[in-house]
Each structure stands twice: as C-alpha cells, then as structure tokens.
Length: 301
Image (cartoon, rainbow, N blue to C red; front, side, top):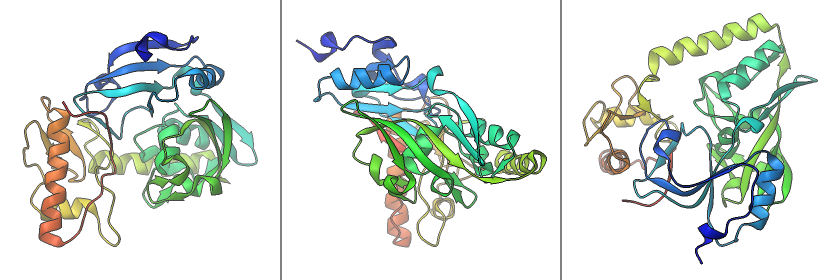
C-alpha cells in the first residue's frame, strides 16, 4: 500500500500531487507528492507523530528563497497558514510572531509597538519560519541579533522551544535545523525601546533603498548566492559578465546581479543551470566558489 493512501487523519488539508510553482516567488517547479496545510500546532504535531517515519518532510514558507525543481518534491511538503500568523507585543521590548508572518509585517508591528532593532526585517523577502531556518538578514543585521527563542515541532511530533544559543546560528545557517528535523512554528524577538515614528522612518529608508536597488516586481527570489568573505556576490556575478545575460528563460537582474529572474518562460532547470554556470565561471575566473543562498529542493525533471 502506498504511504499516500495511508496518511494520518488531520483537521487541516491534505492535497495530493499539488503544484508548488504558485507557492514560490520564482513560479517554477513540479508538484509535491502531498502538501499538508495544518489547522494549528497540535494538528501539525499529531500528523508528524503518526506519519510513517520513512516519508520525507519538507517545510516551506512563502517561497521567496526557494527553487523547486521540475520533477517535484518527494514526500510531504508542509505549509503553515492562518493559525501561524499571529503577531503579539509581549512587553519588555519583546514581540512574538508566528512562522507564517511575513518578515515585513513583523517589522511593521514592532515599529507600532515602539520596538527598535527589527527594522531590517522590512528588507527581508520571506516569513518568520524561513528567517529562523536560515538566519535571514540584510543591511548588516541578522535574525540571530534579535531572536530570543523559537518554537518548533520535530519530525517525531514533539514540540520544542529552542533558545538562541541552541539554534547554532552562523551566516545564513542554523545548525539545529540543518538535519531537516524541525518545523518552526513561531519565534520570540527582543529589541530596544524607541519612538514608533523614529522606527518607522528607518523602515521607510530601507523600503526606499530596496525598491531602487532590487528587482522586487519581477519573478525572483532573495539573494541567489551568499556573500563570500570580504567580497560581494553581485560584484563577482557582474565581473564575470552575467548581469542580464539570457540563459533559457532565466537571467541575472540588470538592476542587482545577485538576483535570479524568471523572465516568464523559465524552467527550474534553466534557473538552477544558470546558477551553476555562474558558479563555475566565477571559480575559473577569480578562484572563488560561490555558495547558493536560495534553497533548492526536489527532483530534476
């Protein structure tokens, strides 16, 4: 009997062979074997506890930093919805946000509560769960700078709360999440007290900078490559001659050469192939190996 015909009973939704492209900003990729949209944290925990431990589980967020390959994703893809979208100021310059809360909304609500230090989230194209997974950041600040603790459910269905230290953060990495055993459900952050108007003004400056330097209205993801030590990926991509150069239906943006663009007809193979071609070319020309920052999942076509 196929595992798909013997799934645990849930209160949320289970969708078989569901297209994943609409869930990602790059708008490419094949279907998930099964997508699970849990009703709440208890539903998620019960499902994971009862699910055959041999079935792979892949959590996704808003898909801003995600490339799904054309052959789709094996096992169960988990996407959190409304029940994980709560934002709540908790006093002491602390604010809680569910994993499905967009980072920009977290920044906005922190500003309203007079909490400074989370302004950088206004420039992060993702949600809180993804920020916890990859220590997201921009403009000199990172998730690890403001996170107090994060709530998660393990692959075995156990609820856990991890401190900042237990997350094992480094540049765009979370050691605790690296084994794929955690689904983050929410996080508690702490900043400093400031006037809401002053925080909002700094956020507005971040928004203005992002709109003039990044292709935010294209089919794109976040930064494609991590910045190598002492250098910037956009400079290397540009210096190697790849800014705006077509590769199937893909290219790197003319506006910011570390942003992959789906020009409208790209496949996931086009986008990943372009990235790999650039990695090889930069390595040959400059002796530097670029690392993917965009998470790539699934099977080739």
